[in-house]
Length: 389
Image 1 (tube, helix red, strand yellow):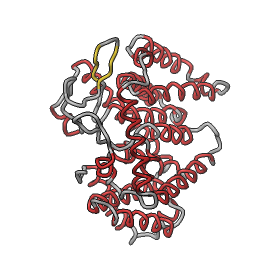
Image 2 (cartoon, rainbow, N blue to C red):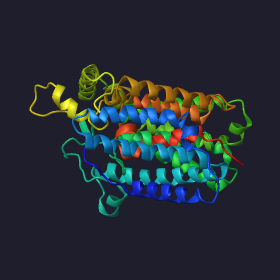
Image 3 (cartoon, rainbow, N blue to C red):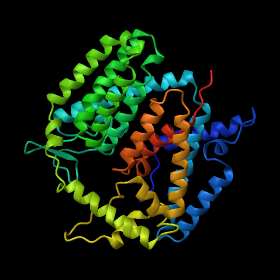
Image 4 (cartoon, one colour):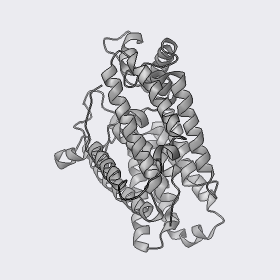
């Protein structure tokens, strides 16, 4: 509900300015036509959203949400057109370094059981400890253990970032023959796996184990696995060690449907259905879900649990109505078809796309938090990209 200007917003604004300036130097095809079917289709989406905003309880919040949406559409479209094989390798390098950076910070948070502070604040680290109200703790064998945040707003967001970043690196190991780069990738995958476990994010951890299994099976009969056998033996050994010698098993073993997280998600889901029923065609308006939730939420406690529903499809339906949901699902279907166009059926685009759908079915950060929005728009742009030599 609080309009915020992030450093990344300024960077995207500068990117947009340079892009506009470049139009004078060379002709440029319509980004929106390539990325969103056609410019008329995008205008139809904007019209639906504007109608919803005009009917909302807080139109200014809705207009801010629309501005952010257009920002990330541009960022995704820019990624689609300008990414190449050369700068894709640079992207893998950046993800590797970023994962190692997040890992060092997160391990320090875990050992200290609080934020580190200092200059990490300027990278986005929040100030917290195990007793901070609403902080994310995990109950392990009767003890509350602080889940690591890194520089992210919640351990689940960090878990999603690590999962997507490591999947990108894992499925593109064959893109380099340099030994130093392979060592960097091994370090990032190992550190990322450790910190993913320390986030105690169940869905992300389970998905990572499935992705590792799929990758090994898909590469079993290929020379790639034989050439890098030492690499994978070391990495898999570390993964097995981390699973059995960290508290993660008890995190899954103690899972109960009566847990607070299940109860809260169930209530939010029920309330979102009520909101959808009250605003079927145009929704509540962007950024107005919490306002409507405060009107329909029923609680027996003195506090309200005001959070977006932990499902991106229900959130889209609640805020933009059935018309917006149809557009959203249609675009995702087009994106999945684009991912299927790759020669190899088991490729990183399909794996990451399906991972986002699964993560988004249990959380909302891809649509509500700056880091999640950046990651989603970049990945969608990457899926639509056609690498040029």
